Length: 333
Image 1: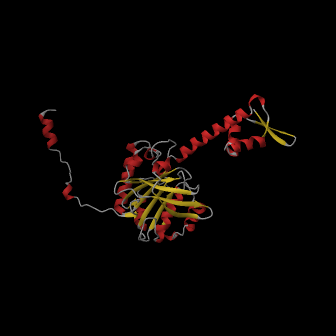
Image 2: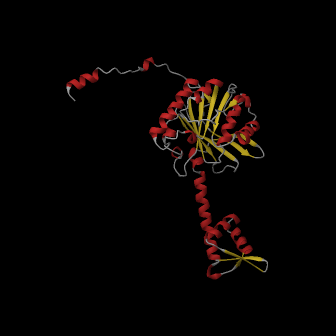
Image 3: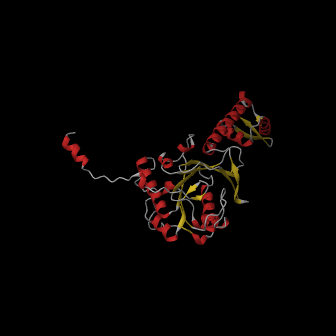
């Protein structure tokens, strides 16, 4: 670079801000102590069928009627909510669930997508927030609202869109909750998000939802896995079943995001090990052309701790033949 080029660069007018001119601000919370901040975006991730949509609707119901959420001493003021759900129909799933949760449905709205699909960069999001003075926006799932020409696997696509949403939330002083799916890997929780890791890196608060070892089958854990503004909040538990519906049931100091995100992968591995054990059992039992009454095989398997379901899966895997003789089923290889 010659001297003329150096002098030219010195004449470039660059806009800068000095730290002393910036006014510090306190973070306020939609769900304190630090689960969901106002003025930015929060992510909640979980396996399919884990109850993510039910959880978000429970939040919406509480906000619409000024209800208490776990960890809150003072109810959040009654506020409107925007819900964009690309997976569940309103008439048969979302509206009945909101009613079951006791929501004030006059305060819950959705943006009409019949003429134009909604994307994360759509100006209608901010317009709807301002129209209803909404304090919570739920976008479920985030992957379904990426523009068609954007890739959620590339940081250069993901980060600008999430930063755009955060600016919308900051301008409107709302909380935007993005619901995400996870991949099938057995990695750390922050790497289980479907798409670029920047989906997790670009937002200040991330929740992980799902089952965990030691919990009843109808209990789910919500683990706080990332917080840029405060310490992580304690894991919250809720029960979800047909009899009782949705119920908050307490806290857990033991369950981590990794416990939740790797539960299904661990169970799959355990199931595979059990099937392998059952295959070995049947192979030994039916070796050398043995023909064994099915009832006897089932009883012997039960004594070894092999369930009927696992035994049936092992039978299919090694093609055990079943033949009826004298009114009784018999098995052979």
